[in-house]
Length: 570
Ligand SMILES: [Zn+2]
Image (cartoon, rainbow, N blue to C red):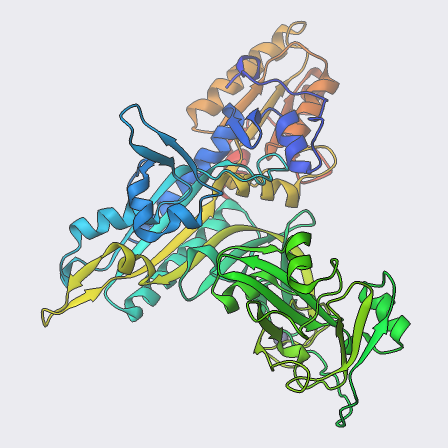
């Protein structure tokens, strides 16, 4: 392709609101264009990258017997009512009414649609197993969008679904997809790690995430320095030092401490270790208000809390709700004398302590020497705690845990019978009995992957594409084409030869300065830059510069095709 014919132009101006490197560079280099907040157009360079990812995914699936299909982006709400997700996902789903009055939604994911297809065709155990895939746009009406295509409302996603007769079959399909994902990310050039994850809103039993580690990532990943243990913060466990306390219970006391709500400040004021303080936080859920208690030096993990409570919605209770239920301003809630309507759940870290501190349910007041059972009913205990760096690994029981930032680019789930149950996907077993199908689902955020790779390997000059997904393999620069006929002729000849050889080449044929051409080439980030100029000919041919290397070299015109082929096949 001639660079002069590209619809996009490079620009020195980064978008005003851009903070992420990928947002800046993909916009400046002309890969993406913002159509609305969180909604992007993929310009020819960006679309070529996306199509390469698409191609790699399809090839790896094809090899493993995964069938490609395409489902609609508009769904009837009716389907989503069958699983209850029309309600559960209502904040994310964009809904509208057709002229004929039909309630429709824009697909945020496709479990319901694929289940509707599956239940129509799966009748017998002989119809299983099946894995189907599509690479398709999705829309989730997120309130918070940021970072260019890192977190968008509309995005391109690969989503596959497996159907099996039993859990052994599901495990096999899951393993096939896991292996396919490893192969896909390797070919794409994405350096991912696989971590244990929480199933969250998708439901189901086991799941793992494919994570790209990078500073800007919003996911916290817990990694053991001593073994293979890796888990998302939502799921991770850690071994912490339990806090030893006196055996003898002291009388409970009410202490006045005006405006003191932070644990550190409070512990100092009361002259007790932070481990003896207790955070009690009130949450509003669809099942009512919940008070969650945790040891003062720890933080509540909302994903774990949701799972422990079996709820979908979890938001901090409003100041008014807190006042109504505790009688106090925010910051003084505690478990003693709470109304019975409030369900109390406590993290395991609070267990076993005696004479601990709690909020007094009265503004400016704290209770000390509080004890379970004596002062309030012993609550249900659960793991609702976020792991902290430096804790001991739950797997090897030796290594220390560290916490890194990452971006989730793939997620695989063993859904089990969650959807086959609500949507009625059954098959007749060999003995004629009706059995629910075991389902799995598997997704790669394709557009987010582009941004994540950019975040991981861009440098201060611009984008750096792995060969597998680069928009072009070779960036050919001809210098002074309007002034030097020999260079112009040779450059055009080479461009044609490369195309005939099947090499993907972007030819910078524009009549602009050499400096601007080199800067643009670095910004666009094509793996191999070849420069043809008067000086390169004097040096023996073409200047050969690999984007990831600092030094350039000279390659003769006679050797150039062979050299490029060996570079591409390396
Ligand atoms: Zn370990």
